[in-house]
Image (cartoon, rainbow, N blue to C red; front, side):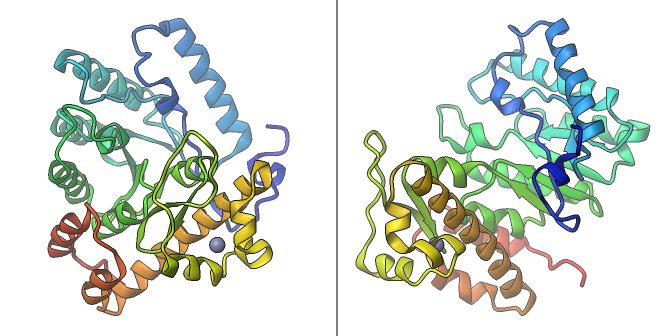
Length: 304
Ligand SMILES: [Zn+2]
């Protein structure tokens, strides 16, 4: 807070820093954390934003509904989040809406509010509890339809989507016209010994005990050996397999690099019209492939 986020993390000015508000960590505590405590958390967040100066930040707290909650509890999440959206409709705070039962009401409430209706950026949350395939989770096609509705409602605004960080879900986010996305999945996977690979699911490289994942095929092993990411270029496959902090850092670097490269590849194949052919070859048999085809049918290329 003394130096600001860019200077203290040694991030160059042309790199945008997006701040998250930590609400996912408070999920389900909306009735146990008191109003007073929440007020303190908000003030601290405001102070941090004021002094840390991120380039992008959401409202201090949103109340994430999960499919398991009763409709009444989900309604309370909606009302509370909208209250914070209204309280922080000033000063560059990005309002948050959630996919789920209340999306229509969110969109109506946003459009009817003077300042909120003019916001240039908006964030969508509530995806992760639905992607976890828990009982009562929304069908994927409904999530997709929800995202498309937000895009269609706020045509020329910047839309950020929380919790999208798998290789396949990244395709969906870009096809649906989302402007930015974030996830800590690449880091969580790294901590469990998992690496991400272009166009395919997670693979286990370091056996860290409690977690299991699909092992690498021979071809995937070859692909990893040739990986040009900063971690593999320096430390090779052994670096990815290492235990402790070094292994974690190498896998995290590799995973993030794979995601950023994937995003760039998607964009370039969309812009030169080769996406339809490319993605069928590139993505292996994923649960998401039918959804990607669906999103591609509805995809409208952004203006150059
Ligand atoms: Zn790598």
